[in-house]
Structures are given as C-alpha cells and as structure tokens.
Length: 332
Image (cartoon, rainbow, N blue to C red):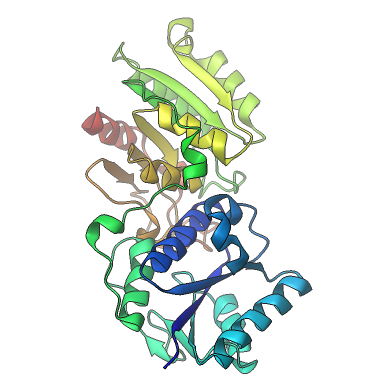
C-alpha cells in the first residue's frame, strides 16, 4: 500500500500561513507528506524551510494549478492515498475546489469537520486550529504527535531577528487588514483611554508597531490626546515585513492587539497577550494561561468572519476599555 498524502487549502493570510506551514512541518517530521494549495499568499514561503517550499502551489496561476495537478497525479500513480483537507472551518470555495480536484482524479478522499458531503468526517476535538488539523492527519495516518510537538513555532530564518524582551514593555498592534470595518478595529479614542489607564503604572512603557497605512495618523492622534509625560513613554516602529514584525513582538513582555496575524506570531514566541476579538471563530484564537481573550458583550450572536457588518454580531469597536484593562492587569 502507498503512503498517505495530504492536500491542504490555504485561502487566508499571515496568521493562517504560519499555522499551515507549522502543520506541514510537523506532519513531515512524523513521516507524512503534505501539499499546500494557496491563493497567491505572500507569506507562506517565509514560514516554510527551503526543502518544503516546492510543496506549496499558488493555484491562482495556471502554472501553479497545472504543476499541483501533475504532482498529485504522480503521487496517485505511485499508489499513494491522497486526502483533501480544507483549512478550518471550511468554506464553499474550499469545498468546491477540493471537489474539482477530486473530479480530476488528483485526490481520493475529501475530508471535513462536519460537512455532510465530505467523504470522511472528523469532528474537531481540539481548541486551536493547528491542533484541529494535526488531529485530522493523526486519525487518517495513525501517526502520533506528542503534546510537546504541538506548539506553534517560528522557522529558524526568523530567529535571527529576535530581540531581548524588555520587562513591562507593552506592545500595541491596533491594525487589521480590514481597518475600515468596525467589526475588526478598535477606535483610536479607546486606545488612548487604555494607554492612559495602563500608564498609571509608571514602570510600563509602550511599543506601537505595524505596517498599516494609518500608522502615522495613529501616532499623531496619540500625540494630540495624551499628555507629554505619557506620550514620551511610547516608542514607534513601522515594520516593513514579517522579520521586522517578529523582532518588534519579541521585545515586548505583553502584546495588546486586535485578532490578526500578529497574535499568532506572538503565540509562537510564547508572549502574554490581550486579544480583542470581533466575529471570529474561537479556534482561531490562541489559548494559554498568558492569554486573555476579550469579546464584545453587546453581540447577540457569535457570528462568523464573514459577518462583520451586522450589528447583531461581535464588533471590536464596541469592546469596553474596562474589559481590556482588566485582562491586561491580570497579566502584569
């Protein structure tokens, strides 16, 4: 009988690229072969070691799609069993893509957490997206991944950017790629209130970092609305790439951020975090003793990542400053 081969869809951005690359690396260490189908993700190659980069295919291009079909067809001819796994929680786009690949004969079984139309259903039992997928591969392959091997990690190439942690340096990352949507951003005035309240502890300093187009606007806003004594305790770093972002996070003892790729980088660095969550699934949120997950108490429904414009669903913009400050104070 041939080996097991897994095709994993990656249809999102930075944080998910880190998670899926970790999945591929850990599966390879356990003797399993994984391919990645992504939509021109700019980050995936930053997280994969050189020997695994040929297994990631940009299926938005004809060349990438054809190359992936050829690679998987070759695996099938060698007798391998090829499974198609959607990145959790799954989507119609992912299901139709894997169904198309099955029609082409490149995958044999479509795997899902709960989709009735899948060939194999493996309900999620873990509470974090990386471990949900590791469990799927474990069930299908019979491999065992010990607990100590299940934590999120960064590739060696990024470790050269790490800086020493400064005690009581608080990282502030207000940015989301959907910065125009109240569901995913915290208003500037609430950040000001948080900094004012947190700075009562005179030992605390702050590092605002990111690469958002509103970076300079945010700096000016803080300068205008904070007194000089507090503003002088804030440093700013406009990062241009993942390596610089990782370096900035590594300096901080605690990160306060909206739920975006930065929190997964911080999770890999084992940082304490206060995470402001909008309409996001719980298994996308890092877990741990040093993590405080803050939600919108006014939301009527949990909602999903695609329901950011409905007032019934969670909105980062409505999160109370007092809730963020409470979570922060529990960590210092």
